Length: 426
Image (cartoon, rainbow, N blue to C red; front, side, top):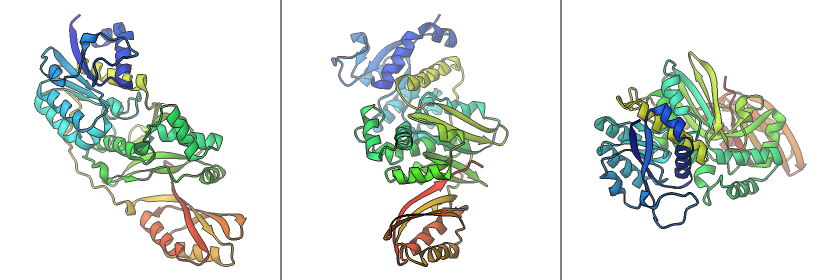
């Protein structure tokens, strides 16, 4: 059996996971790809640093040039977690005629077009399954399994940290702060959790999925974003009473050729499968015009699930060594709708003073701005602090915002406490 040499850039959790999978499943992997895979070099910051995995000292290097100039290394696996440096590494590797596999969603979201172009020019493979959904084969499914479909919409839980936090808040009544602290203790959240809890991580991943699903370049800055920091146990409880669960969803829809792209906390019907995706698991719901509805579910992060996706890409490259695939020159240029043009049902919680006529004035204001109310729930805590909760029919974001600006000015309205969207996957 022929041998092929690869290099791994970065030896954090995912790098170690890739190492373990290639070592433990060596025989099965060789049978499936037709090659004996040899890890020739591993790029690290500190060669002498003690490591929990037993790895030969002469494999480790702190010099990328050593890898770049080694013509026997045919494939580079980028797992540094960096952005600018990772982009440079991948571009240089491609120029040196080396195939590239990455798990770096940020680089792909920012510079994907440049990387695809370089790979096509150099005739090398560029695979990135591990960028979204950890071990879930969502990239391959969109590129291959659903190639016969026009994808109409997708919606997913694609950040395990926020899903873990919301699960703890829903199942145990934990506060946001307590659930976040536990997520950090378990290693699900970073010391600085901003990218996760503010929705940036999900935005980067959605830009990748939407670009593939709708065959168009997506600027991640064009995606509407809200995080979960403002979600309270009060909203969790109201959602339960109304038959919903709150999830951070990444949503992409094709609305007659214009795209609706958004990441935000969402009320999901409790009987929908995606509402029952808990802890750090991920899931992506897809609607295709031929296949109908389907959902992919699994571990969204972790050394072995993500490592599984990386090794799967390595195997795919070795199987398809004659002809590079997964190169994209976007065939369409679809417009992304302004956030004010998006349409949803809404959950709105107000803090008011309980006085005659307040509800009528609020309802009238909604009506004037074309917002139709489905239900109203009043929860009296104190006379000067009443929770008034509305759910609406589908309404434009613009109309919701305009109505709430006027409602804030009404006498006896203390505050707009919460605004959340409702998604039914119709």
